[in-house]
Amino acid sequence: MKDFLKYVFATVVGMGLFMLVAFVICFVSLIGMAASEGQAGSVKKGSVLRINLIGSLEERAEEENPLSILMGDEFASLGLDQLMEAIDEAATNKKVEGIYLEVGTTFAGGSPAMLQELRQALLKYKESGKWILAYGDIYSQGAYYLASVADRVVVNPHGIIDWHGLGGAPMFLTETMKKLGIRMQVFKVGTFKSAVEPYILTEMSDANRLQTEAYLGSIWGQMRNEVGMSRNLTPERLNFLADTLVAVRPTELLVECGLADTLSYIDGFKDMLRAKLNLKEKQTINFVSPSDLVAAADKKDEKARIAVYYAFGEIVDQAASNPLTGGGSFIETMPTIRELQKLRKDEDVKAVVIRVNSPGGSAFASEQIWHEIQLLKAEKPVVVSMGGMAASGGYYISCGANKILAEPSTLTGSIGIFGMIPDGSELLKDKAGLRFDVVKTNKHSDFGTQQVMGLMARGFNDDESALMQAMIERGYDLFTGRVAEGRGISKDSVDAIGQGRVWTGEQAIELGLVDQLGNLKDAIEEAAKLAELDKYSTDTYPAAPNFLDQFLNQQQESYFDARMKAALGNLYPMLGTMQWMMQNRRIDQCVYARVPFEMNIW
Image (cartoon, rainbow, N blue to C red; front, side, top):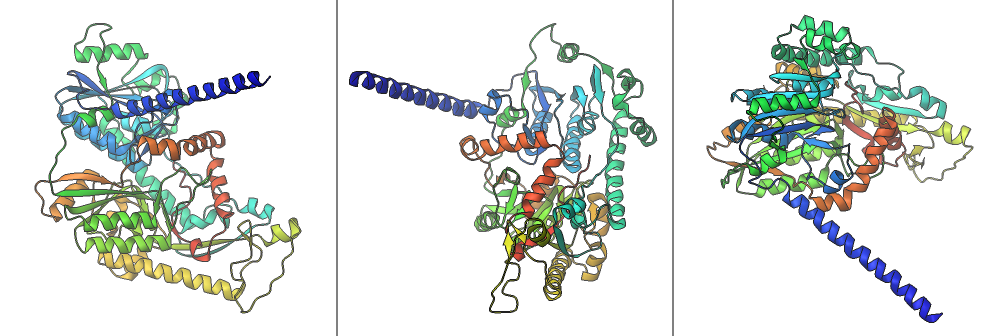
């Protein structure tokens, strides 16, 4: 019996060691796969840059994860930075003949301004004389907006082009909270500061409806006119097609109305590509990915450098990690400040471009980052490049730069402050039957401290409400003062265009909130002019996480987060917001410079 147990134990240990060794070998192999991806020399003569439009469009490309490839991850993301660099390289690389836009059925797109920046890069590429062909089974509106630049837009004979216009549908939680016994205590400055409306109203205010119609109209006008120029269609015709809902009509009409050039299955489209490349039937097409093309490009290596610092996501005092609010991008106070301090002290960095794509967030964190940017600006030029959104706190951190550039459809402004603290006394006392008693040494000893599960056990009294409102008004006064100082205009003028109102880049340039329209590349060129640089190289900050960091720290969270989004759909943001409300937070952490929690533009 003893020998039997000994053999069983030895077998189990042996199997465990074998599995451990096998796992290590596989893991090392995967890391090797990641390291070998996109090595220089992978571009062959007669290549075609294949841009696979799947997943979502993000500001920066993450290092390709072999585990995601092997598991068939349908929630992939595309890095705008990598796509822009690859398109620029394709225009000058003699080995690249053209671009193939492969439209996937899961392309969720990105913000209008990010799509606009990518589309402009494709138009710039066409000036080289090289071609672009697009093929897809189902074109989302964002995908079609990009694909419309192509020399030929090809659709599956039973495919779809979705062209319907823009809309917005905010979700209101007021009645739901009332049923639960929760009342949101709101303090704000700004007629247009609509972030609080889902918690106190049941429909959009007149002011919010006015600003939403204005920025949606501006963005739609830009999209419609740009597509019209590429497809030789009038704005009136494109509006008519949007109103007729072409997505549910016979596919043949897409060619008749001018949205597409021809219908074909993928094999027929590949024959079109071969004809473009003068290849024989069934001859292999040399496709190259954006990552491979970027890796093969010749890089400048000048001592004088322009740093491109990416600041995208919610502005927070400290990033939280949980299933409903984790997994996203954050502009965290202290890590951001430390990175900016390094750039300020680096003598080889002659100028800094800050790429801002943020809806804002913590008012306190925004002020701290603004201050650090001013210290940086005192020593070297700082230029802000606005991405999809640089609003409220996102505009706060931007307003003091030497120069601000935005895309025409960037959402910016939203100069305003608000605070929200839930009063759950009815839920806790009347519905749950809880009772509370207090012993205190001073009048306000229990101010904001009686919390159960993040809900206040009592509402604010009149004195406390007045103190909160005064704090919000001081925050607004500070915000408008920072903007007035940075933009060289009076506080009254800032207040007139502030009040929490959201503007597009197209509108903001007329108001003096930005200096010029342009993309990240334009911002880098402006920084070089300010620093009086003829020769320079660019470096990006902060360093992107490598594959090992993603595997150890992010893979499980990202997997769960993606599945939750897919399962819950439009309910996902609502649950995330409710989870945020249930957190225990200090009073100062409830003061925000932020646009609405979900803009819902589609």
